[in-house]
Amino acid sequence: MTDVRVLPESHKYAVCAPDDMPIKGYYKGIYDEVYVFFHPFIKPISIDYGLFEPETYPGKNDIIEKCEMVTWKNFLSISGIESYSNLDIGLRTQIFGLKEQFANKETADRVRDTCEKHQIIAPMEGFFPEFLMNRLLLSIKKKGHNWIWSGDEFCTERKLEYIDDLIKDNDCLRNQRLNLFTNENEILLTTHWDSHFSLLCSDKDTINRIVKNTNLEGFFCDEKTEIYWSLRNT
Image (cartoon, rainbow, N blue to C red; front, side):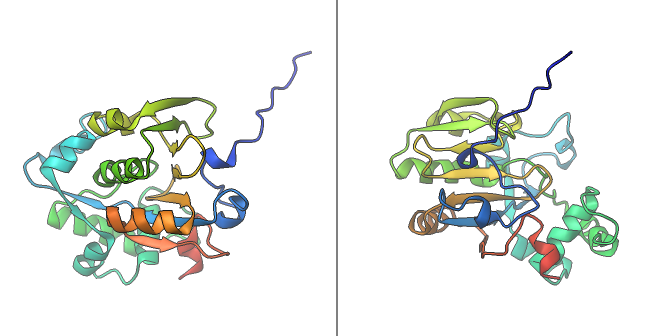
């Protein structure tokens, strides 16, 4: 008879909150606050728009150097989409990430049409945003952290990384690094596999400093915020 192997419960300081409960409730006792920050759109400037395909997708530093960042606020303005919640639903609908009763094909079509018209690349789900990661890592370094742990989705595999090496590495965000956390668990950066935003978890003062230094676009979670927050706000 074969024994059934059951994984131990994940360390909450090292993984993304599940999508079936409030985010702050999941991290209670570990992180005081959680900030949802949006992954920006990408506007190629000195790089071919056609390279943004899975086989040829540019690296982090190529995007930073050769593209412009388009915020969700900017995208709302040029697309006519009414709110961040509707934009999140449109992005999720595009990747078939919502049940039919929650999807909005009209908004998804508007996202696609706007991207095609303005030669803009929509953010990819489940990956840290290239434009923001060097800024975030530098901001964490300014807090006195030279090293950071990186882990896969459930942090069953993790590796201690030198922050300067991650900043220089052009392809480091394409290697299933979904969780980054400091050695004493003061700060967690994590991305949900089916979402176009990430979570910054820490105390409020630290988050405020990082948000200001990095110019993040997003919002603090309240006691009811879940991964599918946009469905509650429509």
